[in-house]
Image (tube, rainbow, N blue to C red; front, side, top):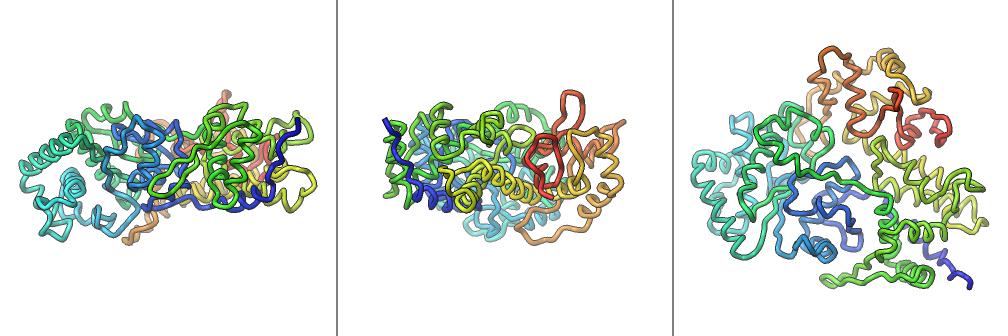
Length: 505
């Protein structure tokens, strides 16, 4: 029996419609854009306080989705055990700077300078969020954050009484209220202030665990998770033991692709029909507030064989003319992974979008939507984007990778030290960090690796750079102690590796 015809023209348009910018700030995404990753259930659970994830893994995406009523319902319909229909959500901190929900970085700095304790600041922020619509709010007649914090700091008994009363009210209604904190690298202009504010926030979150209906959720970066100074308070382990990493497995990435194609406004119907005819699987339509979201069938979400079969129908099955070059289904995620094995969903989709464009332009007669040469070039494109993305959160990455251009990895630590010393990398990082921070909010401040501020006795400062790079997945150690850089960052940085994807020169 012949296989159903792949709707090539429809899928070409669907691939081109894949967005290259996945960020949403504080605005909830469109319901049709949301692939609810089954493995992220723990991260989305209101009872999970700490969620660790690097740039592009979904911290801000899920923060915004939880804060949107419709998007929260989309999540809740697919992850029913979370009972999100009985959950209210609000911002405790975000990339927004309008001060309606929480103080901005500038205001937080002023509050500290005015002598307010970090814990009093965050207790005020959380209580303000919980009582935003209440006639009984103690802040109704106070316009400034200074005044609000002052009022609460002067009357801790009132604060405790209000938290207990709010918890009772929520429990009586069978509801919970989650206050979400994202973009926490923006709360201060340097590591000293970030540590003070974040340590105070986490202590407040720990104290509030005594209540059953009031919850706090903190989305934090790996470097903050690894910074011992942030967790230096009694009983911090009660938060860290329940922490969850935001991870994307290979199956999740391909399911995201099928979700993208199946929910495309123009090509979605043709793709869904093809999946039904070729795979015997149907997308389930779910209607929420007048919007229909098509849920990827379980086989295409979880079964390796089904995902590989679907991919092979539209892509070269191998990364060359035969199987010796590797199977496309496994090769692609492997070459987009960082040193910790993590893959940004944005990198994955961008690589495929670029691969389709190149295939259409250069290999139109090959009979596939995604030719293996196009996929290789797509990985190069994704590498450049991912490296630029990482530099936004960790600007010092530019300084440590630039001197490595032209070298081949794996290499010894001494080879890295020599290149960094010749380029005066440590001096450049310190100079940038000491330039003085601008007061306006928006872009994150320049934060050097926190390990540089607390060097380990008996080890050189370049070791701190290596540890920082390992923390964020830019480097790894091989079994024989040498240092390696994954293709994802190596390619765009012009660093070579035997047998790897060609570096961009």
